[in-house]
Image 1 (cartoon, rainbow, N blue to C red):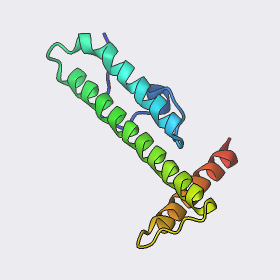
Image 2: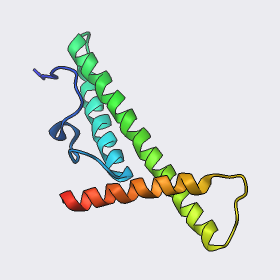
Image 3: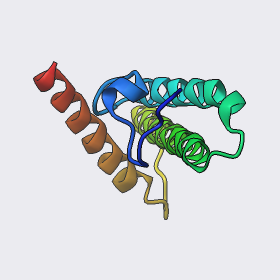
Image 4: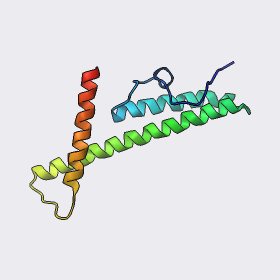
Length: 119
Protein backbone atom coordinates (compact mmCIF):
# COMPACT_ATOMS: atom_id res chain seq x y z
CA UNK A 1 0.00 0.00 0.00
CA UNK A 2 1.38 3.39 -0.96
CA UNK A 3 1.30 6.22 1.56
CA UNK A 4 0.84 9.64 0.01
CA UNK A 5 0.77 11.70 3.20
CA UNK A 6 -0.84 15.08 3.86
CA UNK A 7 -0.88 17.91 1.36
CA UNK A 8 2.24 20.03 1.63
CA UNK A 9 5.01 21.48 -0.45
CA UNK A 10 7.34 18.80 -1.83
CA UNK A 11 10.41 18.09 0.27
CA UNK A 12 13.87 17.48 -1.13
CA UNK A 13 13.40 13.72 -1.04
CA UNK A 14 9.99 13.93 -2.72
CA UNK A 15 11.01 16.35 -5.43
CA UNK A 16 14.32 14.67 -6.12
CA UNK A 17 16.04 18.01 -6.57
CA UNK A 18 17.83 20.63 -4.54
CA UNK A 19 16.12 21.91 -1.40
CA UNK A 20 15.80 25.40 -2.87
CA UNK A 21 15.95 25.49 -6.69
CA UNK A 22 17.51 28.71 -7.95
CA UNK A 23 18.12 28.28 -11.66
CA UNK A 24 15.68 27.64 -14.46
CA UNK A 25 17.27 24.23 -15.00
CA UNK A 26 16.77 23.29 -11.34
CA UNK A 27 13.12 24.36 -11.47
CA UNK A 28 12.65 22.37 -14.67
CA UNK A 29 14.30 19.30 -13.13
CA UNK A 30 12.04 19.57 -10.06
CA UNK A 31 8.96 19.85 -12.29
CA UNK A 32 10.05 16.86 -14.34
CA UNK A 33 10.46 14.78 -11.15
CA UNK A 34 7.01 15.80 -9.90
CA UNK A 35 5.40 14.99 -13.25
CA UNK A 36 7.05 11.55 -13.17
CA UNK A 37 5.76 10.96 -9.66
CA UNK A 38 2.24 11.95 -10.70
CA UNK A 39 2.48 9.60 -13.70
CA UNK A 40 3.44 6.73 -11.36
CA UNK A 41 0.49 7.51 -9.08
CA UNK A 42 -2.02 7.77 -11.94
CA UNK A 43 -2.83 4.07 -12.03
CA UNK A 44 -3.56 4.02 -8.26
CA UNK A 45 -6.15 6.83 -8.18
CA UNK A 46 -9.18 4.54 -7.98
CA UNK A 47 -11.43 6.78 -5.91
CA UNK A 48 -9.09 7.32 -2.94
CA UNK A 49 -9.30 10.96 -1.93
CA UNK A 50 -5.80 11.01 -0.43
CA UNK A 51 -4.27 9.63 -3.63
CA UNK A 52 -6.20 12.09 -5.78
CA UNK A 53 -5.15 15.02 -3.58
CA UNK A 54 -1.49 13.99 -3.75
CA UNK A 55 -1.74 13.55 -7.53
CA UNK A 56 -3.21 17.06 -7.92
CA UNK A 57 -0.62 18.48 -5.55
CA UNK A 58 2.23 17.01 -7.62
CA UNK A 59 0.77 18.44 -10.82
CA UNK A 60 0.17 21.86 -9.22
CA UNK A 61 3.72 22.11 -7.87
CA UNK A 62 5.17 20.91 -11.15
CA UNK A 63 3.27 23.67 -12.94
CA UNK A 64 4.55 26.27 -10.48
CA UNK A 65 8.14 25.15 -11.01
CA UNK A 66 7.69 25.34 -14.80
CA UNK A 67 6.40 28.92 -14.43
CA UNK A 68 9.41 29.84 -12.28
CA UNK A 69 11.75 28.42 -14.93
CA UNK A 70 9.92 30.39 -17.62
CA UNK A 71 10.21 33.65 -15.66
CA UNK A 72 13.92 33.16 -15.01
CA UNK A 73 14.54 32.48 -18.70
CA UNK A 74 12.54 35.56 -19.73
CA UNK A 75 14.46 37.74 -17.28
CA UNK A 76 17.79 36.42 -18.49
CA UNK A 77 16.80 37.04 -22.09
CA UNK A 78 15.76 40.61 -21.25
CA UNK A 79 19.11 41.29 -19.59
CA UNK A 80 21.02 39.80 -22.53
CA UNK A 81 19.02 41.84 -25.06
CA UNK A 82 19.56 45.03 -23.10
CA UNK A 83 23.31 44.41 -22.85
CA UNK A 84 23.50 43.67 -26.58
CA UNK A 85 21.60 46.87 -27.45
CA UNK A 86 23.72 48.92 -25.05
CA UNK A 87 26.92 47.51 -26.58
CA UNK A 88 25.65 48.53 -30.03
CA UNK A 89 24.88 52.06 -28.72
CA UNK A 90 21.18 51.70 -29.48
CA UNK A 91 19.15 54.25 -27.57
CA UNK A 92 15.70 53.12 -26.54
CA UNK A 93 13.55 56.22 -26.21
CA UNK A 94 10.42 55.97 -24.08
CA UNK A 95 11.24 52.39 -23.16
CA UNK A 96 12.17 51.56 -19.59
CA UNK A 97 13.92 48.31 -20.44
CA UNK A 98 17.13 49.49 -18.78
CA UNK A 99 15.49 49.75 -15.37
CA UNK A 100 13.80 46.37 -15.72
CA UNK A 101 16.98 44.74 -17.01
CA UNK A 102 18.92 46.25 -14.11
CA UNK A 103 16.46 44.70 -11.61
CA UNK A 104 16.70 41.29 -13.31
CA UNK A 105 20.49 41.54 -13.43
CA UNK A 106 20.57 42.26 -9.67
CA UNK A 107 18.23 39.33 -8.97
CA UNK A 108 20.24 36.88 -11.08
CA UNK A 109 23.53 38.07 -9.53
CA UNK A 110 22.07 37.68 -6.03
CA UNK A 111 20.83 34.18 -6.81
CA UNK A 112 24.21 33.13 -8.15
CA UNK A 113 26.02 34.67 -5.18
CA UNK A 114 23.73 32.77 -2.79
CA UNK A 115 24.24 29.54 -4.72
CA UNK A 116 28.01 29.87 -4.59
CA UNK A 117 27.94 30.71 -0.88
CA UNK A 118 25.84 27.64 0.01
CA UNK A 119 27.52 25.15 -2.34
